Image 1: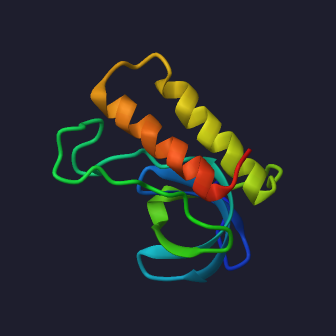
Image 2: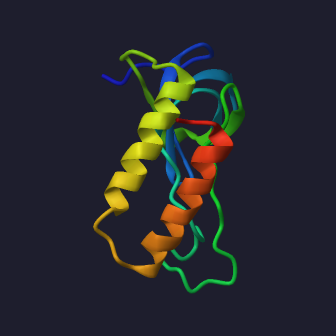
Amino acid sequence: MMEKIEVGSIVTGIYKTGKYIGEVTDIRPMHYLVKVKAVLKHPQQGDLHAPKEADVPLFHERRALAFHEQTNIPKNMVKPYEGEVLDYKESLKIALHAATQALENDDSLWAKRSMENFSILKKDYKLS
């Protein structure tokens, strides 16, 4: 049986290419409004419409959603969450580290440009 998601529920949600833990603050016809508490997966870098391609008109720097930022997430991308909610900054550090580790052995131009973006983001996020 599927657990009912209501306002106040702690959930995971996938937004674009990132995955977050958050609290549902509103229920809309097609979406849940989710307030971000932690980052589980950092968004991929580059163009969402041309994943893993570097030869695109604009190679986007994709930031993780901020602590307490609210976003509409389609209902089918939201699931109940039962585990511990890590501190936002610690979760961001772990997610960014995992994203860069996944690219270490990738010699593609997309991976190289992604690593450059991640390096800039690490400074912007003030992560050590």
